[in-house]
Amino acid sequence: MYNLIPHFALIVGLAGVLVIVSRKLPALSALEVEERPLIPLKAKIWCENFSRRVKERLNADKIQMFLLARLEKFLRRFRIVTLKVDNGTFSWLKKIREKSVMASSAAYWSVLGAKDETPADEGETAVREAEDI
Image 1: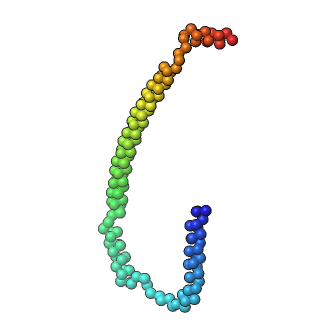
Image 2: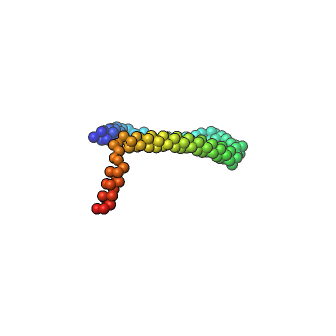
Image 3: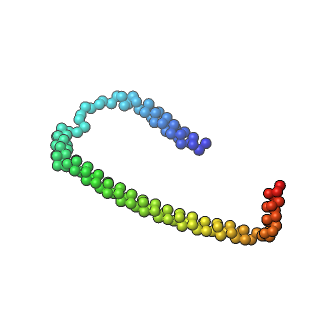
């Protein structure tokens, strides 16, 4: 239900825009269109000359090589940091696993020690009887 509310709001908004544009369409069609360049001719020539001069002075190959070298250096350092973090988390996991194994083995043996122990003779006779059957 809540997923439909944004879709409904979007549809109502688009319908409102269509109503407004359809009412203003006759007024918009009555306007005259003026033909004039967006950029004056002198500014256009200046922009072309400026861009040509910038391209001549800046060697794109040198800039690209510089940026690639910096990117490679950054990626190498980032890789070293991530490997160090990975090594640290691995050692933490190893310590936690050792502690949990020690705790579980200690708990296991303490549970076994708390049980009533059957005498050895009874246990052995029970095993022999099971084998005879």
